[in-house]
Structures are given as structure tokens and as C-alpha cells.
Length: 109
Image (tube, rainbow, N blue to C red; front, side, top):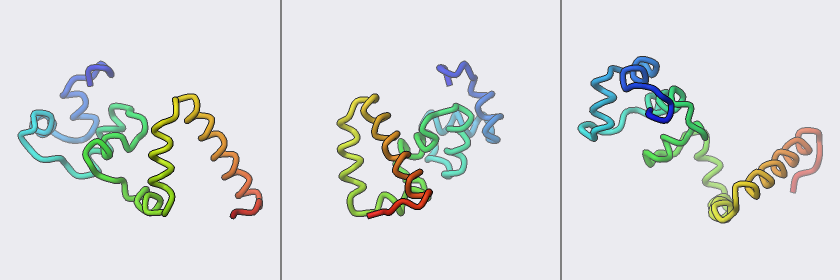
């Protein structure tokens, strides 16, 4: 909130929750809210990636679960963590190119 220049009241209002509820969450006087509320808070705070708060809360976004369960994905994620930001960006461009090729009718192995 501080980095975004937003007060607790502003964040709570934009997320559609009460300031008291947000305060209790932040002060660990209450358990984590629903995934829906966590995602709204991430959107209000303009966090990237958009799933960041869910991941930090120890929750896996539903749309990522099938991908994470694929055989080589955990290995890929571990390897990705060892790359620099520029190497990650290069890898992402390569993956996006493969996806584009696939959509255009290229073969997939």
C-alpha cells in the first residue's frame, strides 16, 4: 500500500471490503480471506504477476493447477528460478513464439 501511495481505507474501499476487515488481516488477527478477495486486493495494488498474493498466501490459482500437475512443469519452474530476468524474458519470447506457431498450424511434439 505504501509503495502505491494508498491508505488502508482506500485499498479497502477499492477492494470492496471494510477497513476493519483489512486491518485485521494485515495485523494477523484473522485468517486469510477468500481467494476472490485476495485477487481483488492484488488488482487494487496493481501487483504483478496478478497471482502474486495468492501464491504468497500459499494458494495455487485454480487456472494454474492443471499446468502445474504436468510432468515436467515443476522442473521447468525450478530451472526458471535460476535464470536472470533478461534470460527469463528471452525464454518467454521463445515460448510465445512457439504458441503462435502452434496456433498457426505448426506441429506440436
